[in-house]
Structures are given as structure tokens and as C-alpha cells.
Image (cartoon, rainbow, N blue to C red; front, side):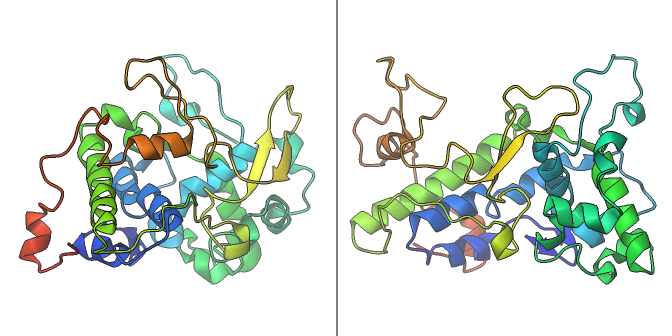
Length: 293
């Protein structure tokens, strides 16, 4: 979530509202995103962006996601390796001239890459880019594209290195414990949860997040400045019978699809090798009179 252009931690009221969901897909989407994602963004941060631009107000948490969207499509290229003594400001990503020359101007680039219509029209009105201190469309688009191509550096908590941060574990445990309580109370008919696999995607058509765009790019065989083959679809890993990369939880060399893992994590499953000592202990929320159990 964002407030006044900046990120805020998910709070008790957010979990209370989400408790009313009955769709498993809504839970997967929100637990993956708003109900824990801002913690990664706020702790990890983004570095080596132009300090003269108020990007926080302008683009909020979608800024790095938009750059990643360009990277997935091949428009942003990043060094594979930087020497230890390379200054951070020199070890940066960019949009190569060989690729940019195919667009007449920055607006054409935003439109051609799909960014113009993404994130609720983040780039379709220069007034939304006021943090770049620009006063007309062309200038604002030029500055926005320049910074999107530069990217900067995401802090470790904002990347796949996040498990190295101690805060990774309580926020993920909270999400798991929360969903387990939903399953327990649904089994007791005290709340409703449809036990049907789903994932609620917010793509370009919904003005959604740049991290979930229905663009899937195949990089196999791509070399140099060649571009990947991008088609409309959903990234592997979200489907019910997609195989997850983790395995052997029970010491049987067993593998799991998403659905099989979901069933393994059933709090009523006797084979689950652990459990939580409590599922409804949220003292901070109780103190605020924000409860859902």
C-alpha cells in the first residue's frame, strides 16, 4: 500500500479487511503483494537514483517494478558482472541505443513497451510525473524514461536475497499463520473459503502492477542485442499443477505441485512436520480492537 505517495506497512485493519475474502486466489494475490510486500520495499529501499527527483511521490513502489518489466522484455540491459572495485554509480543498467533507436521519442517508447497504460495510467499524464520537476509532456516523459532505464540498485530485502534479512521470517510466518487460521475456521464453518485453486492477477488490462502484466518472455537462444519472444500469458509457477522447486519435506524424495503443497500445508494434516503454538495471538491488533477471529 501507499499513503501520500509513500509506502506504509500493512496493519491490523488490512488483515481484518482481507479476512472477508472467500476466494483462495484473492488471498494468494494479496498475501504475495500488499499484505507483506511493502515491508520488502521499505526495508530494502532503492539506491543510486537521482536525488533531485522526488520519485517516491511520483511513482511510489511501482518505479522499480516498471524497470523490471522493461528488463524482462529486453529493453533494459544490466551488467552480468562488475569488479569489486567498480564504483556503484558505474555498475548500472541502461537501455542500449541499439534498442532505443527504434522509437521516435520517449512517449513512443512508453507506448511500445506497454508501460504507458500500466499501473493505472502512471505515465499517461505528465502531471502525474511532477516529482521530476517538469512542466510539459515531452520533458516529463524524457526524464521518466531516463530514470527507468537507469534503474539504480534495489536493497537486498527488495530482492531474492531477502531471506538473509531476519525480518523476512516473521513477516512470512505471519502470512502463513493467518491463512492457516482461515482454513481452520472455514473447516468449522465459522468463515468461508473456497478450496479451489486460483490466483487473482492484475495485469495491463486492469491497469495493474508492472510485476504482473500477462507478458511472458522466452529468452532461450537470445544473444547480444537480440530480443526475446514475448507472448501473452502467465509466468510458470502460478498454475495449480505447476511443479514447485522445493521438495523432500518428508524425507521421501517427494516432489510437489502447487496443489499438492497446498494440501501438505493443511493445518489438519498429521504429516505436516510443524505447527504454530497459536493462530489467534495478535496482541497489537487486539489492543486496537481489530480482530477477525
